[in-house]
Image (cartoon, rainbow, N blue to C red; front, side, top):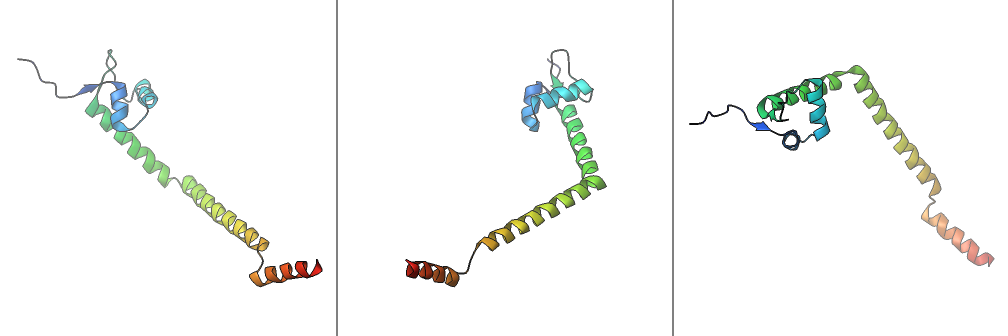
Length: 112
């Protein structure tokens, strides 16, 4: 009788597919020592998954709570809004009222 493994060994490419990350990202995590790879290149799926999920959670939380990030994002949104307002104002300046356009056309026709 064979001994059942308590964990699943998979390749780096398979892990990348399952976790929706790029293979180079998996290699980088292995190189940093965050994920352990065997000599044959296979990794423990459950262990690596937990490490990746913990890493994602802490990095996104710290990024979102960072005052400089939030301030930069707020400023970017304000600038986008102001740019859209300016663009709309400039487009409106180029427009003329219907009656004015009809009068201008009538003037051109009568001049001819």
